[in-house]
Length: 311
Image (cartoon, rainbow, N blue to C red; front, top):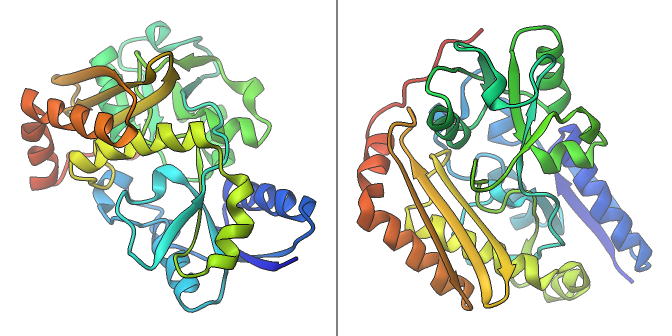
C-alpha cells in the first residue's frame, strides 16, 4: 500500500473533491494527506475570468508542486485543465462524472424566461454570458467571482436577481436543494469537461498511475476526451465562449457543441454522433470553424472582451 500526497486548491469545493478522492484511496488501503496550494486563479479574485486570459490559471502551481515531487497527484475540476498537457504529466484517472448541466438560482424567479427585462444575472463565465444573451438579450450580465457560498450569499443579499453555477459543484456541496432550474444542454451547452474530475500525476510515476487506475470511468473518459478534442480544434483558449458536451448514445457518442459571440448575437451550434471520441470531437470543432466560429474566436482573442461593470 502507498502513502499518497494529494494536491488541491483551497476552496471549499476543491477540498471536497480532494477529500472525496482521498476517501476512495483509503478504502483501497492506502494512506493519504492533502496539501493545499494556491493557484494564480485563486490569487486574482477581483477581475472577471474572461479578462484574466491565463491558460492553466487553476492548475499551473499544482503541476509545479508535482514536478518538484512535493505532491504525488493533483485533483482538478477537469474543465480547468488545458487540453494539451506537458509531456511530464498525465491524466491518470477520470472518475464518473457528476451532473454536467448549469443550474439557475434565484430568490424570486423560477427560470431564465421568468426574469424581468434588465434583470441582474451573475456569472463568472463568458460561455454562460454568451448563451444567456442568446436566450435573453435584455438581461444585464454581471461578473461574479468567489466560491459557491460567496456567490449564493450575494444572491440572497439581493445583489443579483439570479446567478448561474455548475450543477456539479452545488450537488457535491449538498446545496442542490437551492437550484430553481437546470439548464439542459440544448438550452445552455456546458463547458468541456464540466462535472468531471481529473486526477493528474507525473507521467513517469508508474506506481502512482497504477494505484489510481481503479478511479477511472471509461464512459466518462470517452465523453470528456471527445469534448476536449473539440476545444483543442478550436484553439483551447482560456475562458472563451465555447461549449461542448458528449454523452453515450446507441452508436457511440452524441456530441453537442456551440461557439457564441459574447453578446449572444451570433451562435453557431453543431450536433453529431460517432464512435471515435477524438475524431468526433475534432470533426465537430472543424465544422464549427468552417461555419464561422473562427471569426468569433478571433474577435475574442484579438481584443479585450467588454466586461460589464461590477455591482
